[in-house]
Length: 160
Image 1 (cartoon, rainbow, N blue to C red):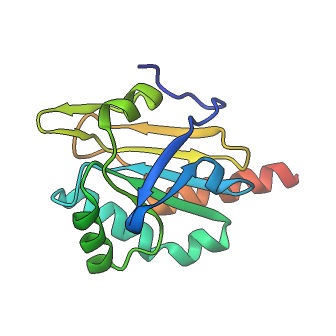
Image 2 (cartoon, rainbow, N blue to C red):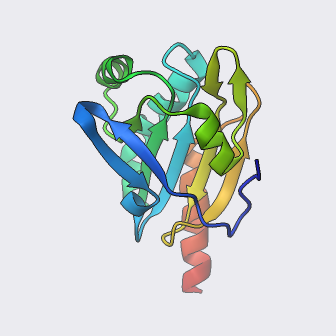
């Protein structure tokens, strides 16, 4: 399982969304900066806090031109209930094959029960990795303020 380094193209992943819809990442982000989050599950308080933080920051993320999506192994019904309860408006993919996702991205997988450990990627408008944050447990995650600051810095440097 190779880790994704800065400059690496983000691998193509399908995010299953509610109602048999799906999106392809990074294609769904084409032309925009993006954040791709892998979370442990609806049962994880740290995941809940992270996803809620990204939702609360949705306006500042949008103003900075940053799209967000997340993915976990929980099923469609649990995911739909979680998204509704917490008012999530960004795509939250369900029913991920943790081992297949890990093989593509290097994310850590809990052996039993099987789920993805918290992982986060910031992608550039071409779908290349800017930052990878891998955790082997509950803590160690991307936070929205850091992502907004990084993208603003990168835009300022590019303009200079």
